Image: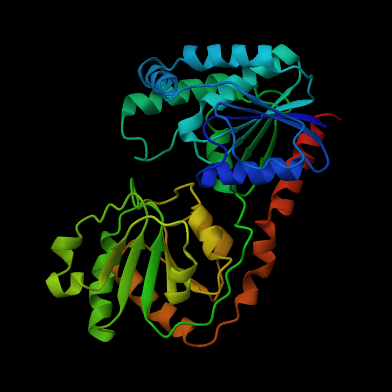
Length: 380
């Protein structure tokens, strides 16, 4: 196949661009792949045929988001897409827009290029767009994104989302093109698995951002009870955005000393080595369609995972029945019992091979194979 992959924003930084880059490089092993991006790339795009860079400044992106929020229109990203169609020299079988909630421009641009080239139009999203249930703060932004999604996703011949719950949510937001093909295409796990000796230190570790509907209050309440049983236990939070909720009103001064707040670091291996339990906190709502990339990373590490998640979520579906993944509801009692259970499992020399089959689904090869089969089906 001849494929043009469209990305907005940096392709060499951040977890989303990491997913895209891995998939694109894997696609390029057996297809003719060009990349269209808005910023110069410092990444090694192995086997890519052509890399097209059409600058799309932060100022332009900012105004584009305002137009989406205020009017549900995309004149700036549409203009960028028309310009992109002029610089892309080749013909394609498929234009693949790789998008997220903040980079919806990639869909508008991809549609422009696909229409100009007269080829199939595919979308792969790692986010539910617009994010449901309180994730999108401004009601006007939610309505604006709904309009953009309804108009542009309706032109798609293929739609992939990163889990089945998200795909079902996304498919319910627009009128499908006849013959639309849809797939679940997972996000890609890190390449380097981390296997370290078990730690005797009772350290719960959360890595990444705490923001939006990820509310740590329930965890702090349960952790306060855990300290009565394990007074030296610690909870470490490492990441950029660290919304600590009502920690200071939940924990007293002495209990707060057992909370370690660290700055963002790209070298998490030493922290994973220290941790006994890895913590994932999902949105504090039921039926949330997001599956954090964090827990996919955690699955590659020989540590017990404590997953705070709602009912009918992707985490409930994917990790049900696993001994090394302890799932808890968003409440103090469930989390307290889960913490005790996680410590018990961690000290019992658990068998992490139970994750092997699912982990193979998160490899770049497996993820890309699903995507490639879906794209090929468009050409029959």
